[in-house]
Amino acid sequence: MTEPLAIRKAIDQAKAVYEDDGYVVSLDQRLPPPFDGFVADAIARGADEFVVIEVRSANMSDGTRDRLARLADIMSEEPGWRLDIVTYEPETRPHDPDVEDILRRVEEARRVVDVSSDAAALLVCSSIEGALLRLSKDRDVAPDRPIPHRTLIHDLAIHGILSDNQAAELDDFARIGDDIARGMPSASLPPDRLDWLARFALAAADNRIATVEDMTEWFKNNYTSPDDAALFYDKEKGDYFWMGTGPHDPEDVLRDQFDGALDSDIAQATKELQETSLCWAQNDELSAVHE
Image: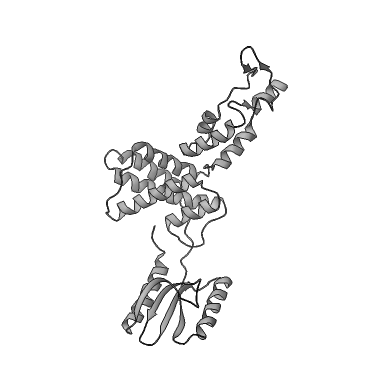
């Protein structure tokens, strides 16, 4: 939930060294022309020079090395400017959270929620963070170093693994968890919201979460509109002759199939499906009819 410790420590150490030498150090600074497009980790301002401080892993990528080399070349032509690259040893890749630990924390949260909603929220927050790490590995987008919880949420949304609605909900909850952990005032969580978050953690740990696109694709693979199924339409009754294949309501089916889905995502998927048909036939039941 916080900046990786190794990076923070390296920045703080560099800042302290320059301040001891009489420099004024500011962090996360956008550089002036002619260095447009670069944002420095820190700038140390001395009596007769500006030092741009960049903090990078000791095993930085070739692309990062090229970027820093370009910046150094530009600075070498500007009097009073120089670049200082501070390296740190990268943290080891986070271990895969254990599913049993995630399940245990969710169960503990459900037991203590009536006694302390804050304690329950912290347990669920920890469960979700572990579940998302497992999910990132299952989907082959696992981070190669520890990253903040909210950054992981953002990355999973970029990869299309989390829906926009899921990412927004999880990011807001992570912020609340941060506030609780720091002893800051935080919004109280309604029981139904905490219940969804707990169910989401369990679904994510088991790689069972889905975006709107995932849900609609799964539904269309398992259900067919009555027109495409060539079902007879009875004009007198105003309905199809379903022959035991339906009718199936998309919303009901999606709720049963995707336990960790948000209401807003189910509503969006249902709306898209109902643009084709309000009710559907199940493919397995259609196959049985045609046998």
